[in-house]
Image (cartoon, rainbow, N blue to C red):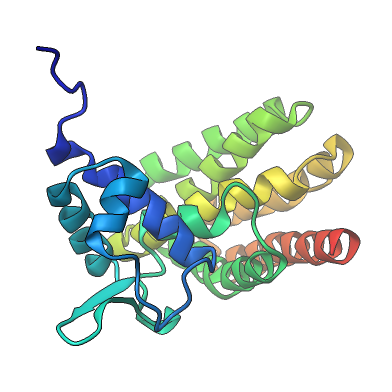
Length: 238
């Protein structure tokens, strides 16, 4: 007798992905009940234990709540773990919505200049070298948008890592999931990518010299340009 290559115990991931994406994308509104267990078993082709485990995982992410009198309902957005990796993926992929692009751009303006300031205060020789290496990769990939996106993400992560603050780095690692998606939307002009290089270099130089105010100012310029790019994309596409 053939065995199932994907045991039911592991198939809860299928439930998590299907229901989670539907909730975050708005297919299941807050306050509404999800389909009953029997329906989910039939729709998703999984066993009851997979459905139950999937619901538990989504409850842990703040998306679902089980009530005796009402079944399992979708929780309001303010209860969601918005920095959860899956929630971010469902929100920003495959293509972010205009409002989400704006939210992310605003978050960068609020967060990254401060991270650069702390990096200039805390960076040791190893951290500075990693920033310089990431900057070199930016220059090396400026003619090719796909590698440039990865190099840009690596540069900003190196700045956060240089701050020597595990909470800051964790936040960056989470939002980089969304950043990668947004970069795909508006980091397509080679000429514009090259125009951003001097700004990134000013950030690197200020951190290398431990000029915290200049690092903060330089990073603010970088992320304000990114926010302007995002706003332009929203105006053109929507």
